[in-house]
Image 1 (cartoon, one colour):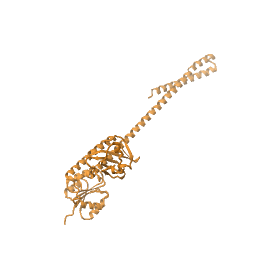
Image 2: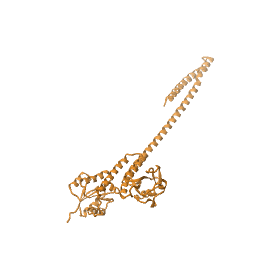
Image 3: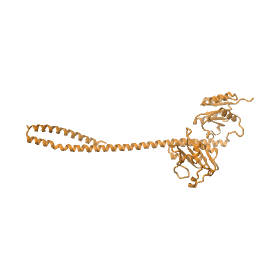
Image 4: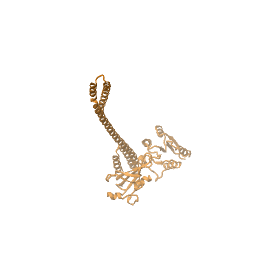
Amino acid sequence: MSKAPDILIFSDGNGTSAIYESFVSMGNYYVHFAQKDDSGLNKLNAHEFDLILVEISQPLMSEILFIERIRLINAYVPVVIVSEYFRETKNSVFGNKISQFIDKPLTLDKLYSTIQDTLNPDAESKKYLSSEEAAISDKKLLVLYEFSKRLNSINDFDQLLMSIIELATDALKADRATVFVLDKKKNELWSRVGTGIERKEIRFPKTTGIAGQVVCSGTSLIIDDPYSSPLFNREVDIKTGYKTESLLCVPMRNLSGEIVGAFQVLNKENGKFSTDDEMFLSAMAANVAIALENTLLHDDLKSKYEETQRLYDDLYTAQKMIVWDTKHSTISEIQGMINEIKQYDAVPTQVKKLIEANGKDNEVADKLMKLRANNDNMFKRINARLTEMLKELETAS
């Protein structure tokens, strides 16, 4: 009797523990569990396993690097990944480093059949890549890495779009590329850049065209003869004099899984677009979606800041005008009051003449003397204070 296969499972335990326990209870395999850390890798190093299963619960670079570390310890043992991430990009991200991929949600049937197929492959189901294919896959992974770094270093929206198109056409050997962004408020797709055509913004309902179909369905499209497709809008070709002969369009999803647009490339240089091209463009689209959202958010915040600054400047100018008007209005009013007070400068002289004319003992003269003294002091105080206020206003900023 042959020995039962040894299986090492690196599980995150996020709702899958019961499935693994059911699998263990079947009794057809020796199952070992390990943590995704040095202790787990030490267990791999100390024992020879027939299959390794790795559960990936987050789309992190550390998860990809963990697979690399497994391969450094053992380059030949089959590796199966269980994840809801990297499904469309698995070939580009992992290349020949994995044998099978189980898309979540995980079930006992999926787990059992995949392990069976992996441990007992036939000629058709064997999925190891040739050395040449593996080298190309590794190069594509490096391109994706550099592509991601490049996008994350750009904040200007138009510059970002130009870089995306330049890198995508080069990587896929395509003639042209266009990024369509979903405007959720207007339910429209719009694009501002396309290689080989005049730069302008185009808009159309998200339910029309090939890009609209991809966005609404969430499914990629490879069309070898676009003119035979009822979705294809040949008016663009007619206006530009361009002939679209092949087309690949994939949805762009953000980190939350929401579709935020479509990524389209046209006219493969040597032949037709393949499913490998589709997976590679999907991997690029994931990076593009994140970069676009970040850049659009940056532009929105910048626009709001500039609008706030403009409103502040307008408010400051209006405030200065109000202060200026109030100041000069007050100055004019005080100057008028001072001029009115000056009209009373002749009163003391007139009072003095009346006293001299009526005699010092006259009762009227006594009253006039008191009135003169009171008025004289009062007008002097008022005049002094108003003059002081006028100087303060004239020197105030």
